[in-house]
Image (cartoon, rainbow, N blue to C red):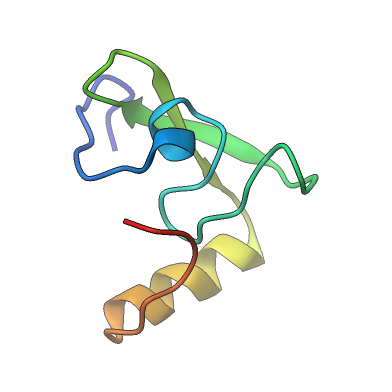
Length: 71
Protein backbone atom coordinates (compact mmCIF):
# COMPACT_ATOMS: atom_id res chain seq x y z
CA UNK A 1 0.00 0.00 0.00
CA UNK A 2 1.31 3.44 -0.88
CA UNK A 3 2.21 5.70 2.03
CA UNK A 4 0.49 8.54 0.15
CA UNK A 5 -2.79 6.67 -0.37
CA UNK A 6 -5.77 8.46 1.21
CA UNK A 7 -7.64 6.13 3.57
CA UNK A 8 -11.31 6.92 4.23
CA UNK A 9 -13.77 5.79 6.92
CA UNK A 10 -11.45 6.08 9.90
CA UNK A 11 -12.38 7.05 13.43
CA UNK A 12 -10.57 10.01 15.07
CA UNK A 13 -7.74 7.95 16.61
CA UNK A 14 -7.12 6.02 13.40
CA UNK A 15 -7.16 9.22 11.32
CA UNK A 16 -4.52 10.75 13.61
CA UNK A 17 -2.27 7.67 13.38
CA UNK A 18 -2.95 6.72 16.99
CA UNK A 19 -4.86 3.47 16.30
CA UNK A 20 -4.67 0.66 13.77
CA UNK A 21 -7.29 0.80 10.98
CA UNK A 22 -7.18 -3.02 10.71
CA UNK A 23 -7.51 -4.26 14.28
CA UNK A 24 -8.35 -1.06 16.17
CA UNK A 25 -5.38 -1.30 18.57
CA UNK A 26 -4.98 2.01 20.41
CA UNK A 27 -1.28 2.91 20.30
CA UNK A 28 -1.68 5.10 23.38
CA UNK A 29 -2.66 2.01 25.38
CA UNK A 30 -0.67 -0.88 23.86
CA UNK A 31 2.92 -1.29 22.74
CA UNK A 32 2.91 -2.89 19.29
CA UNK A 33 5.01 -2.32 16.19
CA UNK A 34 3.30 -0.36 13.45
CA UNK A 35 4.16 0.95 10.01
CA UNK A 36 2.81 3.87 7.95
CA UNK A 37 0.25 2.69 5.40
CA UNK A 38 -1.23 5.92 4.05
CA UNK A 39 -2.77 9.23 4.99
CA UNK A 40 -6.17 10.24 6.37
CA UNK A 41 -8.34 12.89 4.74
CA UNK A 42 -6.84 15.37 7.23
CA UNK A 43 -3.35 14.65 5.90
CA UNK A 44 -2.16 12.81 9.02
CA UNK A 45 -0.12 9.65 8.55
CA UNK A 46 -2.07 6.43 9.23
CA UNK A 47 -0.25 3.48 10.85
CA UNK A 48 -1.17 -0.22 10.94
CA UNK A 49 0.08 -3.01 13.19
CA UNK A 50 2.66 -5.44 11.87
CA UNK A 51 3.22 -9.07 12.69
CA UNK A 52 0.90 -11.83 13.82
CA UNK A 53 -1.72 -9.53 15.36
CA UNK A 54 -2.18 -7.63 12.10
CA UNK A 55 -2.35 -10.87 10.11
CA UNK A 56 -5.08 -12.31 12.36
CA UNK A 57 -7.03 -9.04 12.18
CA UNK A 58 -6.76 -9.01 8.37
CA UNK A 59 -7.98 -12.61 8.18
CA UNK A 60 -10.97 -11.79 10.41
CA UNK A 61 -11.88 -8.77 8.28
CA UNK A 62 -11.63 -10.80 5.07
CA UNK A 63 -13.88 -13.46 6.65
CA UNK A 64 -16.49 -10.79 7.32
CA UNK A 65 -15.94 -10.46 11.07
CA UNK A 66 -15.84 -7.00 12.60
CA UNK A 67 -12.72 -6.40 14.70
CA UNK A 68 -11.20 -3.47 16.53
CA UNK A 69 -12.69 -0.05 17.20
CA UNK A 70 -15.55 1.86 15.65
CA UNK A 71 -15.40 2.40 11.90
